[in-house]
Length: 328
Image (cartoon, rainbow, N blue to C red; front, top):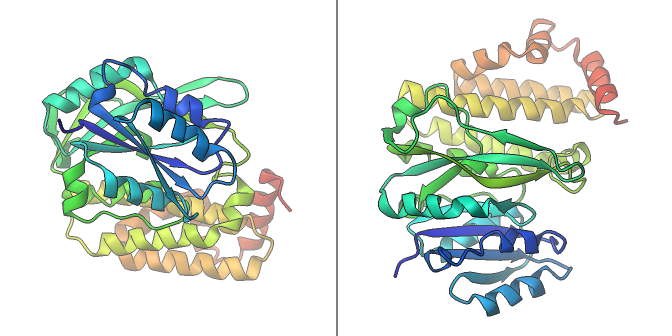
């Protein structure tokens, strides 16, 4: 029997979290309908040994895939290469899923044919335990809709989405190796999506406030080149397609958010000369890609101040930004 859902789990030195992640899939009513493909990305702790125990106990559900360290994006490529499910989604090894909602979620996937299925997710503070729901608002639940109509005024994160596996395979969707590839996972399939459904179910539980997470300032500075690479690839992919105006606007809005993050990283460095020039080049690339994207960036206060001052305000804006972030 074909699996209904393949879950790609990225695991790198997550020995303190991987048990919670894998346990969250253990529901006897759906175990035979899912496969959890855990790609160990060269861990040096006991992550691999922990996953092996799940593979031994539930051999029809859990599978360990081992590779040399290549970054989170590579683990999604690995998961997709091994996936046998009708649908595909990714989960990080330090996150988990809401077990009580899996049965209804799997039932919908089993009985519907749709390119993308979107569910709610929840941010959980690792220290305080405080939860913040990230619900999809303003969409009819449980109906298959045309994507080019449904994506109007829609904001999605990778934690929301599940794709039809064949759609990803047919169009050879592959993520870059390294960090910050979540937006690639979200946007690269977009030109090929025709239908979408929204379920009023919280599936993904996203752990936040970890010092090791890739979105803290020091990590962003360390991996700035990877962030640039992903942003540039998304710009290239946008230029490679002819877009319906609504779908194109959806893509550009998400790229604009990443442009804002890129500016934040640049402003956090003390080497003002180098990163002022990089910011100029970033805006030039945005404008050459899409005037609509450039206009979106102009509406952001910091971008607007830089453009109108012809970057004369860059040093003071960088200083203020570093002071706010408490970095030197």
